[in-house]
Length: 314
Image (tube, rainbow, N blue to C red; front, top):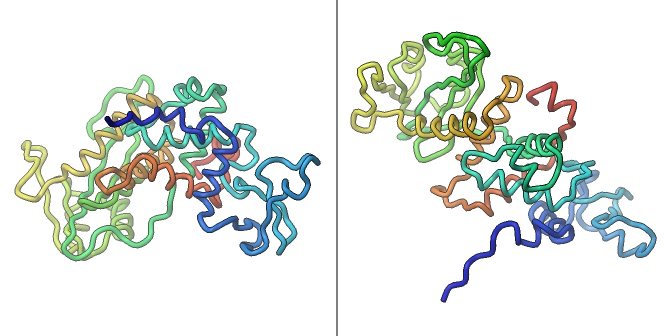
């Protein structure tokens, strides 16, 4: 008889500070501690073991190369936080395992923190999910679908054709591969050309809808095919934008149903969160544990203060 796996919140790393620290250290430093100040790996030691009983805080290490003290959170988005580390690890797991995201209000209830703290934590974790894409999407024999969607409605604004009153998001999806999404000022041909040129390999087969903005730039790629949504054509053989439309359906359900209101200032960070989960999805052989581990690895080298969260999209 198979035993049922324990609920997520019963895992020691989600409830115990020592277990959470050990988990984060193993994730961030699989070959042993690395000094964030000098990169040293040979002469690191546990400081609390040397000064036991003299007030050294748990998890503190000492680098014999640069003579500096550090812990696993130094140089990460978790640095200088008063929130217990096990709550950070649990919050990361929740955000990574929720397909459409988890609201700050729900994090507040689950973690037992204030709403302001939960909101800030979620933004720090989104920062960890961000990555700078390397290389280009597509390539010879590969298909890249491109489309745009609109989010939000200004209070009191009447609905205009083409979502002129809404925020614009462009997504590029390599079929059976990754997605890259961008909050853009407009979806004009002039604005999209440099984006597509930079992000998509010119040998790719570009697939879009019938919008004229793609006609000229499409000629720069190996091939360009389109479907005509205006006449309710959504697929013609292998020609379709259903993959990117499927991504948009998850994105819109999350933004509208879970987060409900996302300001233009923070929209790119939320979009990057959905990109992260899509690029680390189950169909790519990545489960919830691996997805959370990928996010925890992304905490390094990123600092995000409360002031920066409110002022920038950094």
